[in-house]
Image 1 (tube, one colour):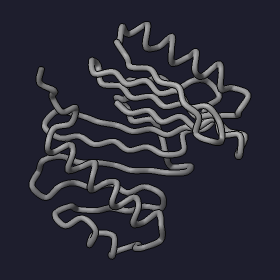
Image 2 (tube, rainbow, N blue to C red):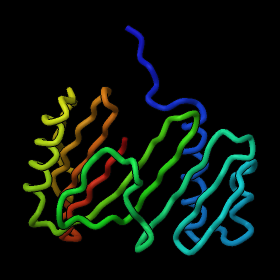
Image 3 (cartoon, one colour):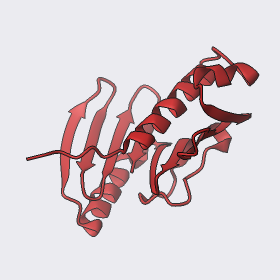
Image 4 (cartoon, rainbow, N blue to C red):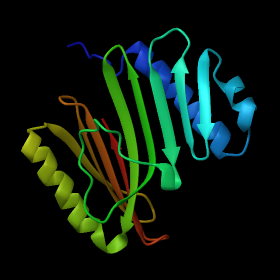
Length: 170
C-alpha cells in the first residue's frame, strides 16, 4: 500500500517558508526588510500582523496573519463554530492546490459543543477520520485526521487559560 503525501513539493516549500517567516517575525527575531533574509527566493510584504509572499519562480503564493488581522481563507473548507475567534491563519497556493491552517479560540464552557460540532461535520462530509482523545496535562484533547478529503482537526480544552483552542488544517 502506497501513501501519497498530502502536500505537493511546492506547497510543502511554501508552508515551510511561511512558518519560518511567521516564527522569525512573531518572535521578534527580525522585522521590516530583514524578514526577507529568512526566505530567499520569496518576495515578501509585511503589513502589521500580516505577512504575504510570492515565490520568485512563479510557483505560487502564501499569506500568514495573526491577531485581529487573522481571517478564514476564502476557500477554506472546514467550518468554524459559532463563538470561536480566529487567532491565526495561513493560506498557500501552488500548482492549482491550496492548503490552509486556521487556529481559533473559544470560551472553555464551549468545549463539549465544539467537539460535537466537528463530530457532526465529519459525519456530514463522509470523512473516514482517525479519532483520538488524550490529555495534555491542562485538559482533554480530541484529534481527527482524515485523508479524503484531507482534514486535520484538533480541539483542546485548556484549564490553565479557561479557553478552548482549535487547530484546523485542510
